[in-house]
Amino acid sequence: MEKAGRRNRFIKHLGMARNSLEENQLTEIGQQFLDSERIKSGKLSLFDSRYDKNSWEEFLSKLEFISALDTSTFGFFNYFYKLIGLSELKDYCFCDLVIARIIWPVSKSKTRDLLQSNLNKNYSLTTLYRTMQTSVLKDYQGKIESILWDFLQKQGETISVLFFDVTTLYFEAFEEDDFRKCDFSKDHKSNQPQVTVTLTVAPTGFPLHLRSFSGNKFEGRTIIPCILNIREKHKLDNLIVGTEPLFLYQLVV
Image (cartoon, rainbow, N blue to C red; front, side, top):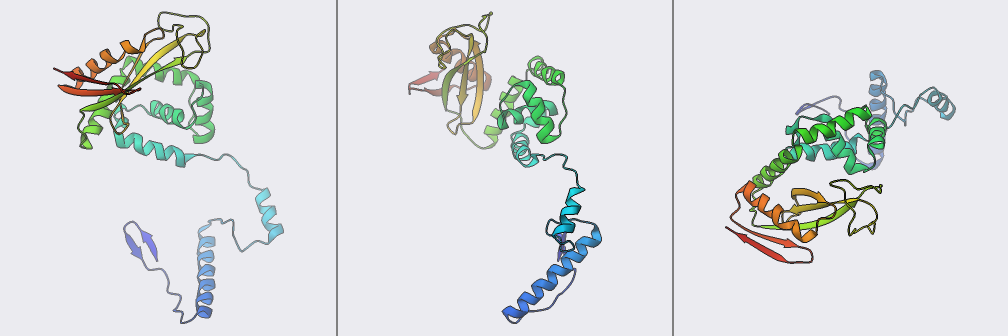
């Protein structure tokens, strides 16, 4: 049988086996039939019975290995990227950058090499930087947060409890600016400038809200503006927020 679209098409009837001997004979006949059909169609198999060891090695020596693409891993993450609704951004380069960041979080230069070698996606380094600039100019963060919120609502989750956490991200540099500041570092890099990053998630761990602050911003002064922003943006009147270590803040209008 052959499946064509949603229909099964009859190809050939080989016979019926009444014992194990006949079953083995039919299996051999079936394999010969499949091999002949494959050969007629020009398809090659690593288990091709037409070649002995020497002729097979000679044949393989004429082949040229070009690349191996990790399309299955990319396809896995790309499926959920679309499922959540992030394809609404209509930015294919940004999508590739997001997935590449999950698979192998490295520099922009190495990300470009990864996309080219593993996925055959050719971007210049300038294009990657321009895409990041576009994500800021077009407020991708706000759009993504709205998409994530809509997706969570479609799953039927009631947002009455959220969890909040803070971390610091340092830079391989030693000069501060208006945003990157030296202060207490969770990575023990207090001599290097850093930024403070907050993340608010639903009880299932689904991310909803991310904000960044200057590196010398005290953690305790980040939670209130973040939660007030969430409450105002999504019209939440009664909200409980948990932090680590576990403290509960209840915000009621």
